[in-house]
Amino acid sequence: MLERLNPSFRLLLSSPAATPEQLRKLEAYFGHIPAEFRELCQEATDLEFKHDSGQELRILGPEGCIELDEAFDVRANLPGAYLIGDDCGGHMVMYYEGDCGPGVYQCDDSVLEPGDMIWVAPSLSALLCDGEGVTRLALTFDEED
Image 1: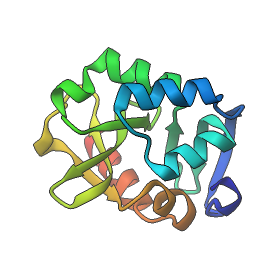
Image 2: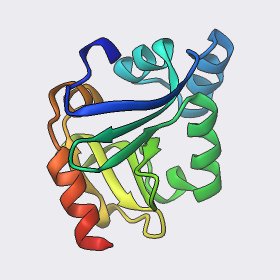
Image 3: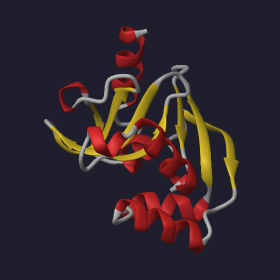
Image 4: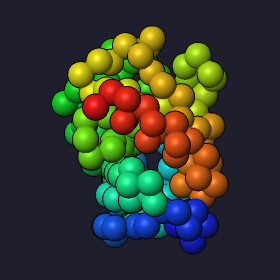
């Protein structure tokens, strides 16, 4: 996925690819791993991006997904949510099936309610590779801050 990264994104930081054991733990914890997220984790983990708009985006590795999910009780508050990252500023990014159907959604990390989920893009690859949803991500966060 990283070789298809939209040119409006810059990769600022990354860690090595997830190990098979880390992926097994992630799958055991969530029950599955979305195919595109598995693909990304097999390339690199703990990724930090900056978009030309100034919007930052962090996509966690397997251990970070589990730790943040546990710390915020995400799945307890949002059944079916699959936390994958944040904006480095108080907003979580996750796979979720909300009012706009399945896709990548965001929410404030202090308000984990189904009605407060904001649809960003139909998939992580649509966001990172096609740039779809970046303006919604940035505009929504700017309005809340």
